[in-house]
Image 1: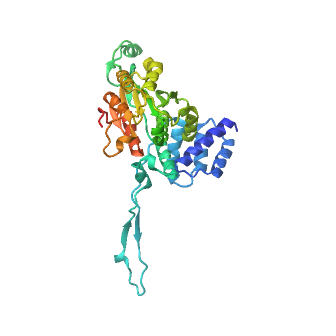
Image 2: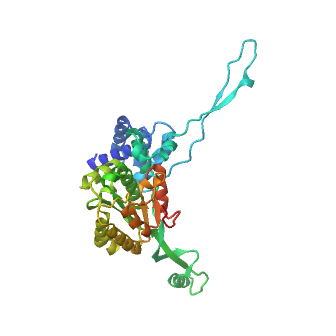
Image 3: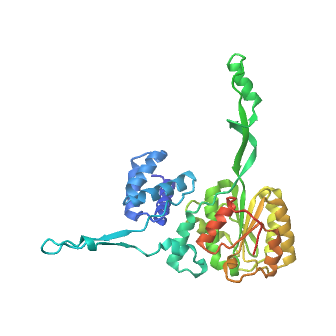
Length: 372
């Protein structure tokens, strides 16, 4: 089997295992053996080779389908419905003499909360290694698709504007008799999303989770998503985060970032982004997400000027500051105070629940002016 095919399938098995599936090495080898006898270019063969080897019980089937759609089709898996609480019925043994204890039966409802629900609101900076791994797995399953915008192009539609060309062609096919009017309407396409993630020292507890969110957005939005890191210099990470496997994407991004846990010069980096990329088109009409705590070591006035410039170009500017979730937080730092007047949505991004909210903002839900 071709080495590229093996690497692709091993990466897919790793995705299934990260989602909680039973894709151990023995099952992965069984899948590769099955594919030796099948057509690896046929999605149907690939699907069933994985399903029959990587799934250990019925609970794995829905998880496998979501991972297959995300890995091979570019679709974003959506979490299924939450399972109902487990109810245990205790039935006592019958007593001697035929006396039963049925009337003493009682129902015991499991009162332990789901581990996922516990983690949703936990600050990622305070998680242990195992909890971070679980949150990373859940971030990979986020639906971070962008909102849609109207395109200039038209497509056939049951109602809308009259489509003269199609109407005339239909009339000619019917021998010159106009019996049916054809219509058209504007197509829609995803709005571009640009994410700028602060990787300075003050953001190091949150940078990994935010970059994983950027990877989920890149997986959801494809070519309509651009990712940059900002610290003492601006680094474009779009190509590195194109990897389907989250861990491979993070390893590539880490290798590409030269200023991890360094200082912060947001004003200069934002100016470089606008001069090199934004003014030429990346920021025009886009949803721009800046993930930073606003600790500006450079000129806060420059940051304010560039934020105003960005706000004029972008469709919407979203700022995610992990410190916003702290009780009594106020945007008093010079950088945050200079940027906030030019922000449309101000959120936290400090936890899984906050990243879910950020995904909804990127998708256009809950849009509004920023507030502290």
